[in-house]
Image 1: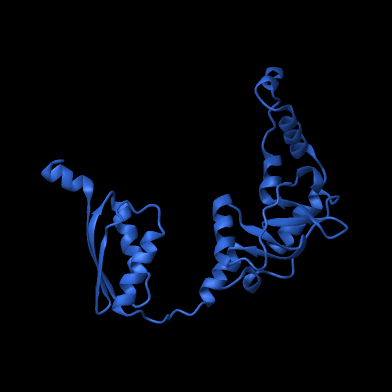
Image 2: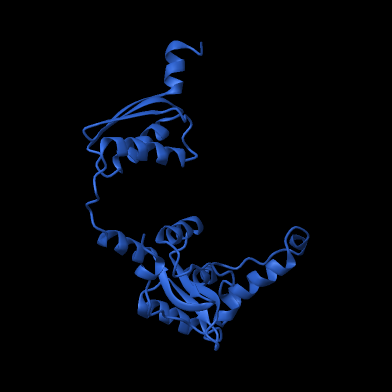
Length: 230
């Protein structure tokens, strides 16, 4: 399994906390990146500056009424003000740092990028910046991966399909029957939705050695509508 260290970018463009917003924006444009790790004089990552941190400054700033302090945290309002009118990177950067280890599997990095809807992650080793991994890096890794995988036998296909189904929380029926014959996987059983039925077929097709899928699963609501709950 590939690790983050295998796909990350080693030459990272960084910015100092005291740099001006203008200089930071110029770095983003000149290097064609969407975010910059903010690194102090000791080499420690103290924040991240993204396009989003700069774009928010272009929005018209609304002056909150005095009574809003009763419903919103004053400290949060102060931070929002600083982010909107600050002139240095330290004033507008995001201080919550999401990062990944170089030894982490790339699937972990992909999950973080997707869950938090971000484009890149700093790679830290013992607190030090050693690289950055982006969505683009993961796509390149996918493109470089060998297309052919060792085909599983019929018995192995059945065992692997059952194992994968056991690991997925969205599967409503743990009694789905699986049979393989000359690389064709047949699925039987009741499911709760068309989405679940389609996802099961996708799971089967992704198995190395699966030549075709005969999806005989049935959506429960259609059976009830046709024959009744009894």
